[in-house]
View 1 (cartoon, rainbow, N blue to C red):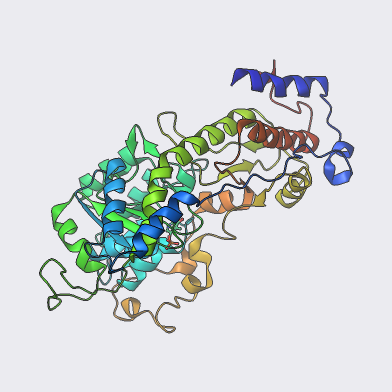
View 2: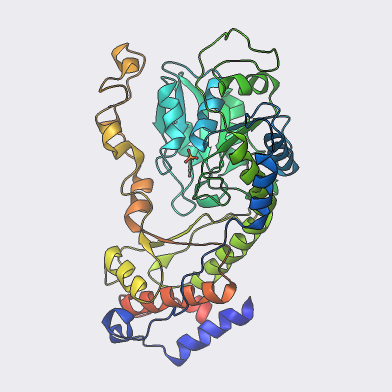
Length: 437
Ligand SMILES: *Cc1c(COP(=O)(O)O)cnc(C)c1O
């Protein structure tokens, strides 16, 4: 959108010396004056599907028409031969780990900036989450640090596509193939994203999606786990359904598995949501990429990096403030942005996962950690350090992106960030000249 960019640019050259007094924080006129756009997430289409569902004699998932419709629509985008619906994204990941045979002492390398759902299944399988550091602006696993974290106990890499931004899958895949590791994709925040043209979920060995209330699409709570691997695939259903093999009638389970089933009402809503998914992802991609263009070249901040060949579906947008380039701390920057009418928040998590109390105190099983007591791991979460991840959380400013926004709204958000950054810019060249010449 070169037109819009030059519009912003002209606005700034007309008004080059943004004064701190102009900030809405100090009584100036806020940049974003429209009300916050809120998408209508469920409407008559879900209502109609639910009405159809309620006429069924059973609401059980096995051979349920809603579940089958949901999986049929899922396969349209993710043509994987084996798929299981389940109760959450957390459950999807747990099922994947169980189906892959992850057990006591097995190490799974993953990201320290993610939802708890990424690591819960690892711990319940008595596996050991091993945190690798992140790429500083992509916020995803740094393949070279993953490589450094591999030991003879490593069994899998669990790649989280944070905020809908694809991980460096080619590098991770090569590494996993060379070392015979399983590559699990946590696609909970990445519906509709693609890595070098390949939808995320189709790049690794097994894909895990969430349908919780806050994701791109949702049915209250739900998840899907899918794979093309036949050994894992034929276990998915039993791994999410108490070990019962429904195709064999009610069988006597051969292994222990939780009940992670998704019922028909959730599947009915999720099936309609799947039909909405491509448009939601497309709009978020358009808006997020537009925001990057608006924010490129502003002194004091760095944009959310997406590889040029990737498609990010922006579950959120997070730029970083740059130490030494601003005369304010992040808290003040966020406060000023909020005053400008932007729903900005500081960072994403307060600290990386390994600094959470449950990791610090290894408080996993009623205060105990059998894996450690049995000498199956020497990991000490008190000693883990991922400097890039810590810096990301210390300097990140998170902006909401949703499909109800339009380019004009996002452009106003960009102008607000520019106004605040310019007002707080330290030193002579208030803005980089490369872009503004
Ligand atoms: C939401 C989320 C999960 C867990 O999904 P639930 O459906 O809430 O259990 C896992 N990983 C990531 C990255 C998530 O954002």
